[in-house]
Length: 122
Image 1 (spheres, rainbow, N blue to C red):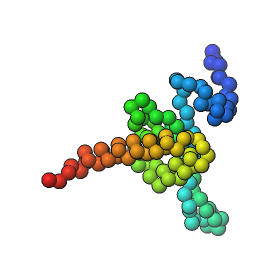
Image 2: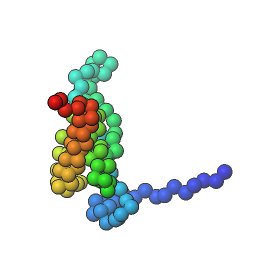
Image 3: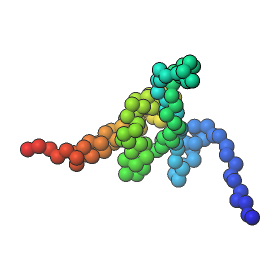
Image 4: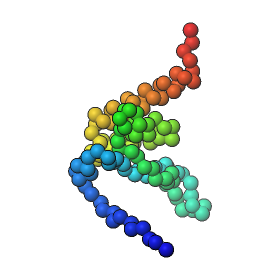
């Protein structure tokens, strides 16, 4: 039985990641959670429910829609979108102008989709 060599994983800094150049895509993982007034076993306050771990693409494809803008246009992001944009800005993970461009592209994509569903009334 042959075993394939598993490449060594190495954490690199943001500066090193940005120097990788073309051919590399950057992403981050975001933990989604929501306030939860429930109790575990009827007595332990839960406070928050974990909704899952999401891989966020931190790149925009050449068509200016694929990647991060496309991610922002997905419906499941809805309430977490503001928190994600805020965190990416505050943590300086993506330049503010790139966040604005991605949000504009995502909004335009959603607008076009709605126009297809709801044709303009004459």
